[in-house]
Image (cartoon, rainbow, N blue to C red; front, side, top):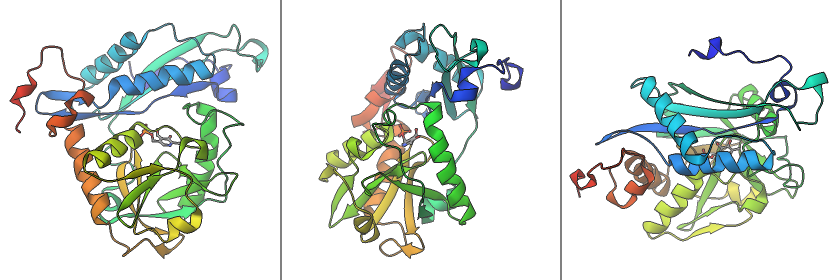
Length: 302
Ligand SMILES: Cc1ncc(COP(=O)(O)O)c(C=O)c1O
């Protein structure tokens, strides 16, 4: 069904209070056909987000994965981004209490192409440091993709757009770096890679995890630790990661060039490793693909 034909009650808790959770996944062409990258990991996080919100899904992990596969299949070759969403529906008397409120689950797909922009993926994007602080892990679970959490990201993204920038970087209550509005952040300093730890107030990004594993396999040391704003400004390279954004170099922050102001070698290597892993071109990481049972992976070129 077309998204505009779905009926959603104006009394929905999800609409009024942000009582919902969502995921974002990408489908890539591989030598064996279309594959949703790290499907099982994304749907695992979807279930964890629902658990945090006490939202009863009434579908198990395999049923949710199958729903994503069938939506991709039904929408043809151009559907490259998939958005499962689960939310509290009509809330009698508009009560804030979600107990007893029905839960709805839907999967939509769009053709997204490049989320930040093709030029930015090639040449780097401009970021600002947002004046909006990232909420703390005491305010909500930042590990959960809860709809209501994204008001903060919306404000920061608007602020970036107003400033003529592509993306915003948010700091947490301690003043250290958290993440972008829909991306995790990495720095490269003196040949080693670092990204804010979970306590810094970040989503446990699937792409973040992919990059950590790809980088370690390529021989880099990767640290998960607090990163100061000052450190960000003097890093040789900064890049952001996300399912929608993929891997995007940051060429300037608040108008100050990052390193040479051009994508650095580590960032470019990560972009290339990620591209290959997601498209089934790297034999070491085919376990991240979602292929029909019985697919003969030995067809893969070495
Ligand atoms: C706030 C936030 N941080 C980071 C990410 C990147 O996460 P992932 O790599 O799992 O898409 C996202 C996107 O889902 C996000 O919304």
